Length: 82
Image (cartoon, rainbow, N blue to C red):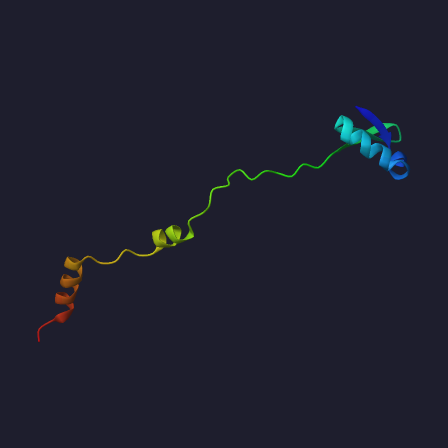
């Protein structure tokens, strides 16, 4: 692993950028002590690329309709004596 100082980052960044591309990372020292590790950025991958079925999710959360039998029983119960 290549070592560089904070001052090197300010003055020689193009050279250090090439080193990162070649070796992968640089150890940055501050006052002679290791302080940071500088690596190339890699975009995070999404764990799942499957499509979400929003309509199915919506239907699963909606109340279930009454059956014909339950609907008739409710009508009869609300009818009362007429």
